[in-house]
Length: 346
Image (cartoon, rainbow, N blue to C red; front, side, top):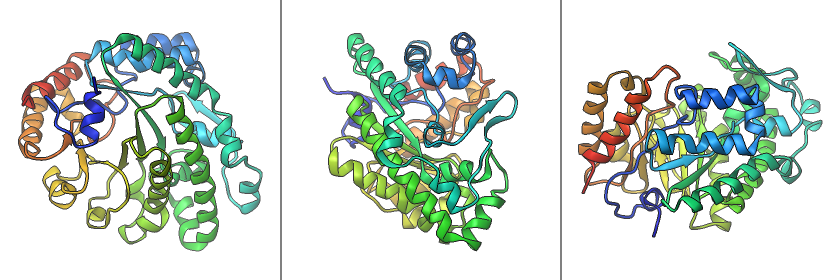
């Protein structure tokens, strides 16, 4: 029996359009908060395979989604490359040693050596593979990574940012250094995702959360081409493993999208009709309900119905146009999932 989510990623006919949510294992679930409290902090939870597997599976049982996404964080890569990462309550992730020079980059661990340090991620995947197979419900497991540009912004800025001014100053005043950072991160990501696939994931998603920070004419040079390089590497070794690309906030880039991948994640600021017109013949489309609609069951049903009708003759996976927010009622998340499955039945 094939997995409905994998079939949908490959553009095959499915009995209904499958659905999952970015950040579906997270703070909106009381059960997640309980496990996180047991772990002590967020990084401890990422480093504990049993607990990370537990929170990965929670949304399957509580919300009813059609795929599980590995519980981890994109910043485990620069952390294991040797950067000093901490998560500060009420603030978020912070690197205490941001990259400012080639010398800073040279001190980091690169390539397969860095990827080999992420054993807790691979152990989590192996545990999940065993647990999901034992359930027998044919649920797909999604692995993921941050795009090199998104990772580089954290590594250079040292924290989340609204202006990206340090990173973009480097882009325009020292592009060679920025490309060196992006190349180094790309190499680690290639091995990291390869090892995720070897450990048992079914589908890869590459997130470029900060894609909108780059002007459209520079987007390919500083982000997309590195994402495509990762996809090409993985497809050369695992041609049957679906790859999802999710660049957030780049509707102006749709005409220039290229690459050997299967699914294009559409963010909530990009009209699905436009994405279908530009990309629907080449890629399966994923998304793209505005996450804040989850505060209202009526607004959720309205959006799901429109998306279902828009994509009725297209290839589609339901999702939000970005991550679910922490204060969304669990009942509303369940409603979203059930409405996606109900309104797309064939």
